[in-house]
Image 1 (cartoon, rainbow, N blue to C red):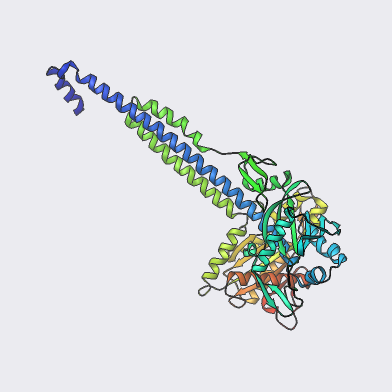
Image 2 (tube, rainbow, N blue to C red; image 1 turned 135 degrees about the vertical axis):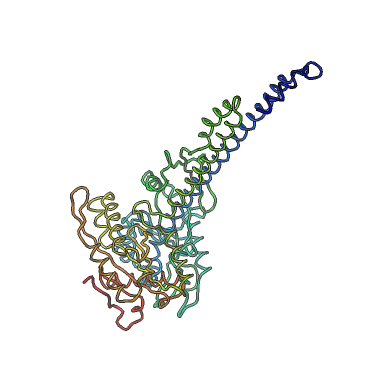
Amino acid sequence: MAQSGSVSQFQSDGGAPGGFGLPALVRLFAFVLITLSALSLLFIGYIASRKADEIAVDKQLVLLENVLRDRHGLLARDQLGLARWDRSVKYITLKFRPSYVVEEFVSSLWYDFGHERSFLVGPGGRLLMSAWQDDVDLTARDLDAKDDLKAIADLAIERHHAHRITIEGGYGQKPVPASEIHQVAAFGYAEIDGEVMLTTAMAIVPDDGEVALPEGDPVILISARPINAEFVGDLNGQLEYADLKFARNGDGLLKIKSVDGQPLGSFNWDLYRPGAEIWPVVVPAVVLLCGLLLAASFVLGRYISRLSIRLEDSERRNRDLAHRDALSGLANRLFFEKALNDAADRLAQAPFAVIASDLDRFKLVNDSHGHAAGDEVIRTVAERLKDAVGETGLVGRVGGDEFLILLTAARDRARLAALARRIIASVSDPITLSTGAVVDVGISLGIATAPENGASARVIMSMADRALYASKETGRGRVFFAEDLEAPNVGAAVDAA
């Protein structure tokens, strides 16, 4: 209102010098101001849309890389129980026994873990065994120097020698926890029989020191999973990308290369670009600014604020997705390992316990009723574990049928044994599938407590895994305490009853 009064007073005094009246100057100033503001807003919209698109694209790429890395880790964790085993060293490295390789080694890789392809590569790049599911070919041959299998085997040999230790009678390998499996395992991609596959390799080494490796390179176990439509669908169950595909060309968004750097293919999908959502608001705001500059600026400010909130929400959802197992809703490996490390850091003030477990007879459910039934069982078991543990700890799923429990509120042996019995009883109850079929599975448990069984996350996890293996060796559906591993009666375990 004060500005209008000044204009009227100026006009009554005869106008501006040179005959160019104040209204024209105001209109010119308003036109210039609105034009500059409109151009500025359009430029800001352009920069904001580009930045939003760049952030969204980067996050999508990183999330896919993390999921692939997680698949590598799961494959390697499956291998660890067979590759770090005195029996494997005895009957593969020291004396190659075909019956052991066929009936125990490959059979376990396929029936227990679902490894579709597996290979054994000896010193000098000699292929000792190749298997498709449980179909084993023991024809030995030398791998070509450019063969992708030889490249990843050589990388696994380097990892082994970097962690090799001297033991009685020869050599072994420094133990590593499952959370640090990448230290001794080689991760990569390979073209095998015309297919691109996700591969993991590690040396076959002793675990208890009953046997030792001789001088020279070890035998390498390689497991591979084809990157096919089923694998991509499994990935996208966690990612939910639009039209995620893998192609043998290198024109996609995330390129896949072999260990020696040769292009094998790429993942591609319809990128989510939030920047396009800016323009339906910016353009009307610019038009509105021609009449109401302040109102338009206010609208733009609100929009930018909303955009920031949406980006933060998107990032929060991505973080949640990265920490949650998509099938069971439990904590995934990444989140569980962080919680375990945090608990180890607070050990002096708050002792804790870890329960390692995996399901019994789960493979039979998949074989008899299909993978969809297996997924139902996993979800049901997850709910039962959460109900049994309650507020006393954190339940995580770290593999196909592998679960971990971090307990911070109950750690004395009596209460742990009681909880273990509740878990075994709950999981063992029959499960009615959506098809009407009734199945039953069991669960084996291994328990380690801190600080009695160790003071670091790595040691505690290793002790819980060892206790789990002991539990399965003494009979499934039982619980074994790590503190009993060195006891005279090592075979003793707590029954479900």
